[in-house]
Length: 376
Image 1: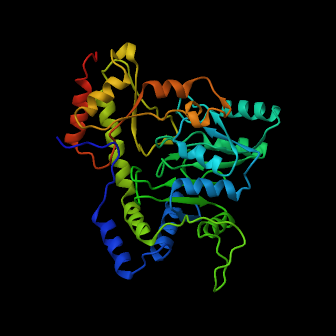
Image 2 (image 1 turned 45 degrees about the vertical axis):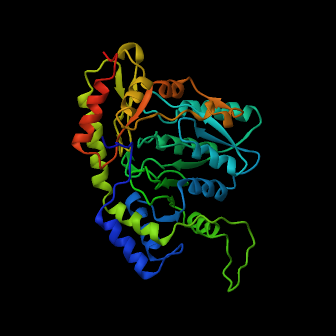
Image 3 (image 1 turned 180 degrees about the horizontal axis):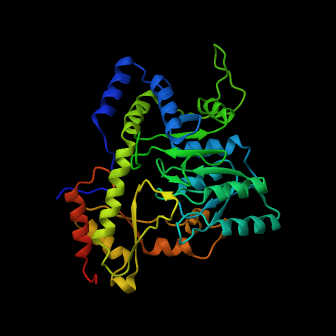
């Protein structure tokens, strides 16, 4: 039986054609015409004027923090229900992550807990400089409200949009909120460049400085001159060519993932204890991953029983993000919440969601779930 992956790359002939064009032109090294075009095209899709193509979404978050002067002695309020890259980038600059819980309504950063954390950390004498919310599994938090809070409190808002390219909230695209935003093109994302990322902003200065730092902070001399420490963070022309081909097909990839989500919901609607990720009014998710909560008391089985039953049939499923404040590496960081993210992690499962998933593959996943021993 062939293996069904959680979220594999989905290629078309366009990516191959553009990649070969880049190869034949001998623009192999970082930078080149495909990098420039990818930046323009992605910025236009998101609805922002400026973008810098980078080696990863993590690099984009790292530079975003550096570009806003965040460093040792500073604190950053960060979603706890996320992948480690979000918090790692804060540590890269020497700042302290302060973890904030999710809401039941959208699984994203809880604004009430943000306000609580900000007041408590300031009362402790901490210098809170920024808020970094995560667009989770393709769903955006109430970023307009977070923008207003940050403006009122003098904080920088950096949107971690790594999982949400093509998603919207309140008629605004993921990546268009705050001072700047970061996208990821890792192999499992809705579009991929194998590895890669993008920093986007409404501020030309931020993106110009990001380009400078990401090319080893080289000064404009005929020899190699450096006055500051830089990074090797630029995306290659070859990978940018792949990204351009991927971006051409993004709307249909979103449609395919949305169809997966709808099919799972309909096929499993009668299973006791199964509840899918909400999509509140005013939000449009790209449905990067379809996520289900499994109440063991109602379903008769727990999340792990379903996951292991799928794995035995070569079907990849994965628990939801383990909250950062439960990770040993961040055990010393402050956290604020009411246990929402812990509960989501304990009972949540990501189902195969790739845009190349066939009707037959999806039916196999559904049949396997329904045949889990002990499921009511």
